Image 1 (cartoon, rainbow, N blue to C red):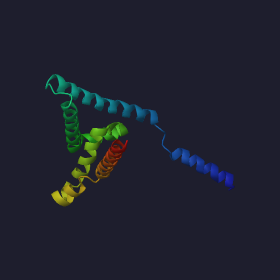
Image 2: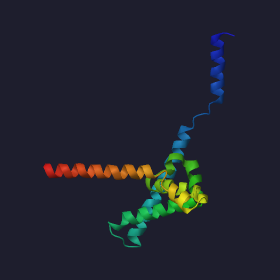
Image 3: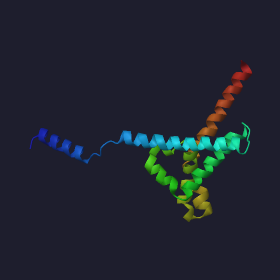
Image 4: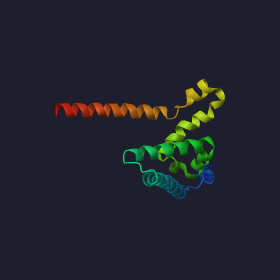
Amino acid sequence: MSEQSKYADYKKLVERMTPNSRILHNCTRSFWVGGLICVIGQLISIMGDKLLHLNLLQLPAFTSICLVFLGTTLTGIGVYDRIGRYAGAGSIVPITGFANSVAAPAMEFRSEGMVMGLGARLFSMAGPVLTYGVTASILVGVVYWVIGRWF
């Protein structure tokens, strides 16, 4: 069997075994689910304004708290995982995706106990994000302070 023939056979095998790309399908799912999560957030904000008469300083906190609560509750009852499998990146809208990344490891390791399971694993996914965010905000704050003080 020639080298060219081996290559052609291998190429046919790869083409047969490689799954078809469903990028448009996946992007559509991601777009509409992520958009729906954002619409729910906007509805919560409108509800806080119209029904609870919250001011402009209270609305963002109220909306964030509600979305974190929804994200962790849906993770706890196993719904958010199904949403993530269906929508992919669309389910990782910043606030609900963050809530899921904190709650999911805690749910997974709760059988190991409150301290070694839940406490130790609670921030295993979100810990690096929190560390980066806090560190970056401190550095940016110091830079702004230095610039404001000297210029």
